[in-house]
Image (cartoon, rainbow, N blue to C red; front, side):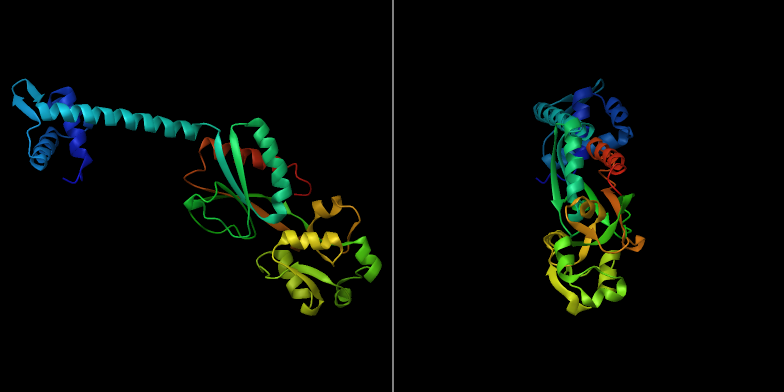
Length: 295
């Protein structure tokens, strides 16, 4: 037989446990006629009597006692499972998956290290990826995204801050090619950028609009490798200001333009947003972001 109606088994279990229809109906929150209908239906499907009916109530038959034993064990297991699930949701422990863009990786490394000092039971998994991971499928618990926050109603989106970007070049590059003297001097210089521009990202749109293709001498698969190229002196390119200002021999070749700045968002799925682990990390992240340089 296919077990296609757990309600009937639950009803029979309560009758076997309490021995009266009225008591089972009260516990289940249903009418006593519903209890009788469930018992009759289940006995018909099983082809066996589960109870002896008499004036004082319902006494389980041998089949009814079997049902009581198995259903009781099942209820205990489900109660234990619910407790474990609740405990996992209420504790700050286990794996925490965070995804961010490459330019956020150095800041996230420091943030996650500090967070784990406070919460040593948490194992972090940082996924650096340009692709927006699907929170609804559990690919990540927390996402740091740039640009437009999106309009998925199942996500909780909170602004984290702005990442100032600016054009930098190594001193060796400037020694070889001279300084960048304003936007009109761009055709006289060599640039580094990602091969595929995402025009929703402000600084990528700017470099696509203002730097001729023939002046792009070093294309990269992602922003991390662009940063490596600029730091090596291959050409002029965008770096986060906190990175460019901290690196030796780097020169900011144009005044920073607020239009280049990237807005970052902290995104969580509505189903996980209020769990202790995710809520704890998001609160920590928002406070820590206030201390990030120029963010």
